Amino acid sequence: MAVAFVLAGALVTQRTVLAEGPTLAIDVGPGGNSPDSVGDIEDCVSVDAGDQFQVDIVIMDVTDLLAWEVPLDYDPAVLTVIEHDVKLFQGANPGSAPIDISSETPDTSGFHSLSAFESSDPPAVDSGSGVLARVTLEATAKGESKLRFGNLDINEDGKQDRGTLLRDVSAAIIGDETGDDFFDGETQDALAVVGSDCPPGSKVAVASGGGLPDGGFAPWLLIGGAAAAAVVLGGGITAAVLSRRRSATARHITEA
Image (cartoon, rainbow, N blue to C red; front, side, top):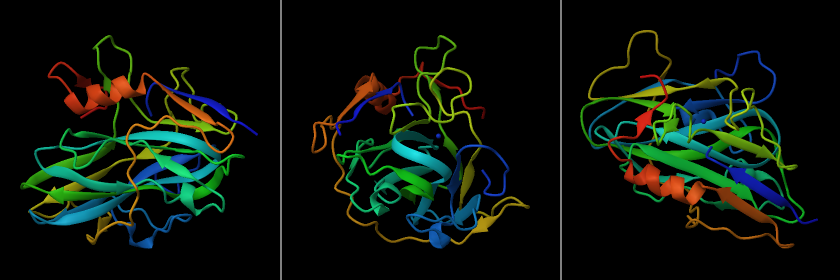
């Protein structure tokens, strides 16, 4: 069955939070996670300048996920995105053929777009909990960087232009309660501290380095599956270019 699907605009909890629908978190202690399971979520990691470490973007209790985008907001004066793997949760399902349409790496823009869609035909959609993306970061300078599900108002018109977006197999948007297409469910951000300790009360992770499995990082690829399944990123290519350039006038909606 061919799947026609429009991924418009752009795509970003504590596991114990009681909420209907999926929840998302940035877990800086990925050691307890697997592609299709989520362990304890840790919200702060302390590293030294020059260290590389990994963080997971995890999703919990999603149903029939087909495509998604999560912008990772970080401080480029402190961190650099070295590489990513977005084929873990979606790739764990037998018959899956996820395609990576994330931003290129290394990335020093401060707003790294993580995105993938399921191209198999019929679609091998994913339900449950797991690791949407595993990101390798390098600490480049002493300081602190929030790791956040990023939102942007690129043209400063008061309306969100970039954010977390999830779609299911029927092309319906998952978790949007305000009608702007972006995910409004529970999320949990994190903190990376370079050269000092995490704040008191943090659930501190032990930094883990090492490489990622080869992800075959694809360029901005608009292709179909075996039966011409189509994914159209409405404004996505333009938005991706803008996000990587990020002019001085582009401002964050995410509260500092």
